Image 1: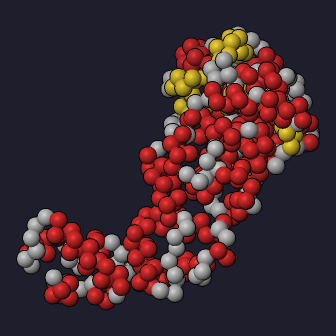
Image 2 (image 1 turned 45 degrees about the vertical axis):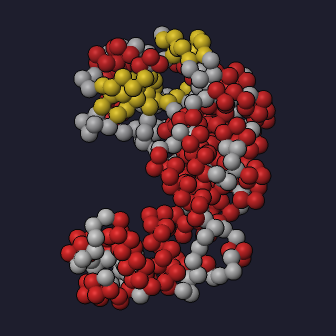
Amino acid sequence: MKFPDRLPIPDEVLKIAQRLEEAGYETWCVGGAIRDNLLGVENHDFDLTTAAPPEDVRRLFKRTVPVGIEHGTVAVLDRDNRAHEVTTFRRDIRTDGRHAVVEFGVSLTDDLARRDFTINAIAYHPIRHEWRDPFKGAEDLAKKLIRSVGDANWRFQEDYLRILRALRFSARFEFRIHGATLEAAKANAQGLSQLSAERVREEWFKGIRTAGRVSKLLALWIDVGAARIWLPEIPGNGKGERGKVDKLPRDPVLVTAFLASDPASLLTRLKSSNKDIERARAIGEWRDTYPDPRHLPEVRKWLSQAGEYADDLLALLPGLDLSRFPIPVSRLPKVVESIRAAQDPLTLKDLAVTGDDLIAAGVRPGPEVGETLARLLADVLEDPTHNTRERLLARV
């Protein structure tokens, strides 16, 4: 792969680099934006690596945030409050597979040598328009290859999350993982159990959002052994669902709920938010229960009971084997659309009367009010034309 003469560096990033260079600190652009631009993928989120120590970066710029200062990273805020990460040249001197202790004051080459994969170890000088590629990352981009920088076993043992990053990059770009790198990933897979659930969840979710095919991401997680450790609720290694999952929206919670036998358990392990766990639980409970689209009252009742999760259940349909349903489920989305367009009442708040109306009509305050409202809702779900104040109060 031939390097272009120059990259489209955003003005705010260029100003930061110029300020550092004028202060006497060598500064380069590195990371995913370099890789993506070489692949023709638009990405203007350029990170900088510099010889300047973190304290000097904070001294040179008025508005900074110490986002990872123990690892040499300072975010410099531009006039639009957008953060640009500036990281001091560093190398690892000690690591336990989760956390690293780094040393500053090293060279650009030393800094690139500690990075995970060759395609992420390319540097570009935004002012002189020079390139540094000591590990032949450009060649690997041309070959569509994920290869570790240096010894793959060491790279993964420094940070086991790099195994999951390899799988994500492979699925995203449809790249092959180099044989030695893949074998090292498998050999070190047990180390994934040391990672925090939050880091694993972030990689799994990000992988679902960015993969060319989610089925490939799933196959890689299974092949390497990551699924066995972190996604054991996916039955039969997900083989029966691999092709179907590609038909779903790129919604990590929806995809996980589709694949898992117990979605709530899986997302609890990954320390997801309570909202995501409850959503997954609802999808798991409802995904085999669909109404007959030929019977409108049944569809309205289903929409009322499924509530906010109805759209999730409709989104699952393209991935399901519809032949196993004795009803024409494929018609359901259009029927739901027509019910919503007609603004049929589906919830208690849609009723033409309130609890106060019922009390005024003589219903005893307390549980009887709720029970009466529920009966009235059941009535209007059967026939929406019954939802008038006069009719409902007359029935009460």
